[in-house]
Image (cartoon, rainbow over all chains, first blue to last red; front, side, top):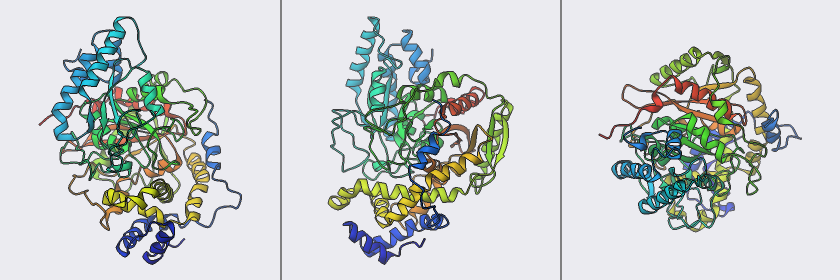
Length: 65
Length: 470
């Protein structure tokens, strides 16, 4: 997973309807970069049938009360 | 009986009022006296409602004199993080945008405490919209640490941590989305319970990230947290994510010994790059638990950095979505750091967000497998004791996120997994700064955490230390 560049961030923010200037885009890129890098090993590897709700199944498995 | 009723624990003051050894007025006056003395230094309260609190205390006393005991917290004065809607009261959420917002409903957690008979002292300061780990707030001023006035309280439940530590309130509701109960508990030397996601209704609590937000108490002891949890946990028709089924008897669990329990100590991540004094206190905490009969086991956890990253992706997007209207209409009314962090969510593609949400189940299963042989895991809440307010005042600078990440390194993985975690005071640095440790448990097993926390507090006194007014 590649982290967005400031230029891409500016375009995404425009599409979201919340424009940011170049300085803000640079700051955002700097802020979210580590999240993209940290998640890179997981991104694009998940099995097709995996539902977000699987979290609830795991969470409540074995809970008796 | 303590000369100053406000110095009692929640559990002790409940008994004192119920047995008429203290009146609600005496207790409330004691809290208000301490608030008047400390507030100019701490800035822990958002609103102080002296007259209303005393009137409510008198009503509670009158009821009790007629044999009408309203509930388990009859006549106990409390204040909470200013994000719990309380019908008819201003709830600022620590912001400028909601400076005049009057709630039209009351949050479920707060209503359950009211039903138990509490008296409202006012409301407590917090980080703007609960989006920050330090306690800074450009609109309402930074909250100060009672143990070291120039140091941060941690956030976002900054007022809750500060007020409980200074004995201005017996306990306070906080909220924990990325560490916001455990950080103030750690930095301010109080006990804080981050509950399992779904344990307590979030209805009427200001949202930040619906997949990560949790409601929980900060108090002086694990016993006090157990008392509050038992009152506010459980199903709620207003919040379908709140767990159905009976609420466990936390008080009974708490009285059990920890002899024979297995407590895990991570071999990596949570023990890496620790401040030497934090590392020493971790070792000492483990030694106490071992002395009390627990078996200490090394545990190898899955890569926690990936969990932190996933947490960031989820939090950023959900927070931006909640705030989008105000980001369009009122961007200038946010503080610079909160605005920057909300803007972060605009730059994360929907696919990345959903991948982070889809991975949650397997990530929790992997964590559960790694800790299958232990009853709980112990780890520091943060790698460092409280920094000063000045050195952590990074605003929206380029390095701001790095500071935030360092402080929340050990708390965010737990939010992503939705697990419960109890932060307990575990020691003090040579400079007198509190240091907390977190006990991390299985989903919905808060009973185990208060059991271990209470056992630790029966043989230590860190939770009893009262900051001096210098």
